[in-house]
Image (cartoon, rainbow, N blue to C red):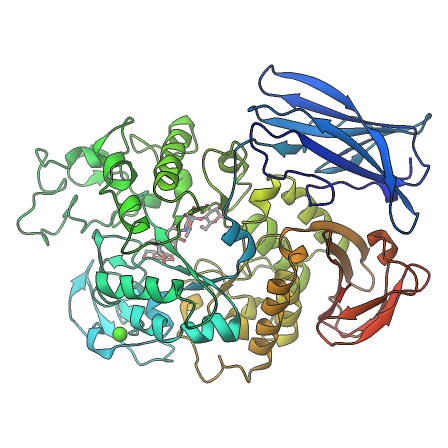
Length: 632
Ligand code: ARE
Ligand code: CA
């Protein structure tokens, strides 16, 4: 069996129902070199009877170039989750093929998923996300700015600093008390920049609810927008303006749901009696919300996020508990309220979701999964198209492979880390770590295999976040590395997510330096990186193959630091060639793998240059730390 000819994924040419209902049979297509094999079999595990089944595939057709055979087979419709792999024989040798790769012996993991009835939001599959840390993006109203000494929290008096100042920690070392004045009105005023210049249509905002810190991960009241960011009516206006098409394409809004813990000033806890008419859990063991938290020894010893006393952990109790109802279970819950009109948000990013649990333990267990399933039901009951984006830094498979919990997750593990190591030679924390192109490819392959295809397509792929060093820093200020990373980000599988400022290579080390104020003198359409970002998002928006098409690895060259892959569907075939070297290289792109015919023309969507396919190859010179997007 010639392994180089074998291909299947759940792209539109190889799977007729990537999101089947329980009534839809799934017809799979498998590719081999023409005449190479004698039989192909689908072997699938059906969770309904916990047994393996086989389907013999039959030859169906050749590709247009006569290079390949296509084999087809159908897995019958049913409601149960299934996992499949292929067995290929040529009369002598056998090869096994699944999402994790090809092997000569039968694999025990890494199969493709079929999860009837599980859908992820189309707008998340097809959009580009822009992440904003609200205090640092744009000050739309100075009237609401936090002033020096306006209040003191955890011994830290608030400090207001000038936009662009490099002060992130105040004199007492309390970085969370340093404010710059950014707000929701500012975001609203810059929607034109986000939608039209950058080309992003999904906004993800770090926490915006009442809280004494600048990051607002220590919530004081979920039902009130922090006054330094605006009011609940400002949020309604912002949401309406994001959804409106009068300022660019229709947009979507995702908020940060910090539901593992509250702040210690939350009215349910009320450590400092800021809520004078309320008796919180810290104040009395007879408080109506005493049971919302887990005290080992009341009042001073209680479970908190990472042990922080400023972030007491919520105790979710059993199904139907007061906390579950308040957070997501009831019509007036936090989760449901903001999904409904007049806020009409489109999704929740679930902060620290892995730890959510009952009794103050570490989460990641059956109770956590039960809570996540209840949360999904609540979210989808209000808006079936809403997105649930979990925060997890490793393989988020446990929350995404049963179709009952998250739609997707922050892709630290399957995007941010490998991109950083390949392009910058550093991990996302800034430590030295370098991988060659071949390892980059296998890392991506392996992490894609962790997820059903519709989950892969909504994984949030970002270069930086508010929790790690800036990509611009790891790149040592070399803007060409940002160019290369952006080209990869906008042509890879998953929702491209731009942490504000990454579109111009914003600098910054670890928290809090990764939360600098946006520089509006740099973040303009005349900046070359911003212009490239806009061009790339337009390309992604124009070609569905880049969003929901197949992904085929075409070439890795560790010596010349090259990586080439295909994205394709029934309409378009695109080969992306990346050069991670500092000097230019001529890349012979094997477009015969995409069935491009000799003599046909491909166009580099970045440069506009046309090329002719000769001997199954397109020969392209690619600049150092740049790429070509060859489409037909
Ligand atoms: C800040 C400073 C700390 C300081 C602390 C107290 O960063 O150094 O000690 O203040 O003064 C929020 C704020 C942070 C703040 C933190 C605590 O944004 O600025 O810290 O609250 O007050 C783990 C968790 C993951 C978490 C990250 C940060 O699993 O959930 O750590 N991320 C979310 C948000 C954060 C937010 C919180 C949670 C709390 O995105 O912004 O912090 O609501 C490995 C592990 C990960 C681990 C990661 C980083 O890869 O696999 O699980 O993430 O390392 O430690
Ligand atoms: Ca302001």
